[in-house]
Image 1 (tube, chains in turn cyan, green):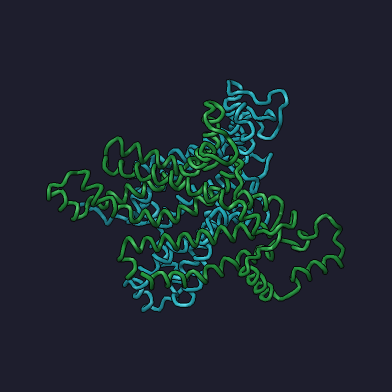
Image 2 (image 1 turned 90 degrees about the horizontal axis):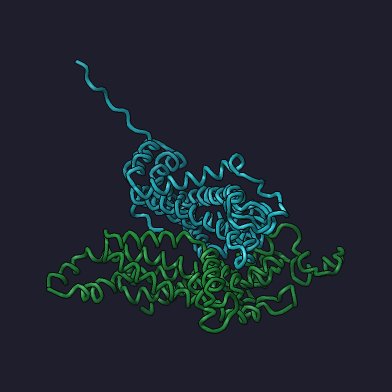
Length: 288
Length: 307
């Protein structure tokens, strides 16, 4: 008689996806974000016009059939610039979070695991970073290093580090005295192996939530700095600097500012929905 | 209570020192020679560069430079702007009231709208009102300050002609910037108040109050609300930081003088002493306000003092 063999355990990624799929919010947000991200990635293929080439014959055309989102003061198609702008705006969001997460998680792991002086030193450094409102900290970094795409990502990333340190350190403190860690130590595992192979995988859930919501914040901060003229500069299309261009034209050509702003809002809304949904199913105790 | 205040004040000292160290280091982390910034329009010969370096103390050890900087700070000397050689502190004090006015108005807007929305959503939990309120809240959190500002100008200034788009002075010039700045914070507060209220409404003392036969509005306003609002106090302090940051944008868009606009102009003009001074004052204000908020929180919730 055939008997059912033992079921293979689902991989952590598969288990994560299954849990996330239980949340309507995560599904809706994820779907909307996927559409926006895909449109941005495929901009070179689907963009109807060159985003940088000017057209003096069609400045400030209202939205219509030939230009669905109208044109700006240099005759450039706003829809094409919104598509191309999404590439930079979203990259700034993701890379900044990557910088914040890699630095913050490393510091949090060390602070939480080793404790004592190392912990005090790291947490005092975090307290000082937290003394600055995040956009002011990003401004200070830009003021020091100068404005460029790389410095923008570094500035936004540095401003976000404290949250990752705190969340990781908090999780490590609660995990490091658990039996599986004590068992690993008793078996002769070195500290790096315990931190990376036993503790870090158990911190994944709150970090996923934090990173997802962090991308939303980073997109806004990056666009804000570009809006102020301190990030990505024209003519390179980026949602923030496009809004700055449209600011002078609000009365006569509202579409130049309206559509890039709507794009930012929809992208951030979708990421927030996704992050909220992930938090509900993965780690409801995360307080950000 | 006094002991708690003294403890928090003591904890403030290393933070203030840390803030001053970071702002001091700004000048030294700039790529290239910082002397170039102070040279002005005159040609920078090696002799002139050495002279400027000596005048500014840049040829001394870093620690000596920092101690000098800290000494000046303690005397209220934040240096002089590169443009116009004006005392930085004077430039900041001139515009500080404008930022304070805008930030407090935005905070008031955020509290009124956010708390009302949060309570309504909690009391109507599970209904269309709750879903609508929370969807609006997520949309509010997703709207950058510069976008809400521009949309308001488009609607209320250009389309309807109700409010002026720029300038300072008078309630009509404060309303739009304060609302634009406060939207994001009101959304954050609405979500927090709803979550906090839902938690409190499940507590035993609320069950007791209802079992005693108290009217629902008495249960909510007298028993639930004050406990639900306690976590909101801490959030107000954190939101003040977001509002100070958002004021940078709002002041620029609505052409209002303020610390944020001063900082941005300083960065665009590479006026490092001005940027150092504005960031230092903004961070110090934020830290002191959070201290006040923490003390208020401890006064309202005695459990905190004994932790």
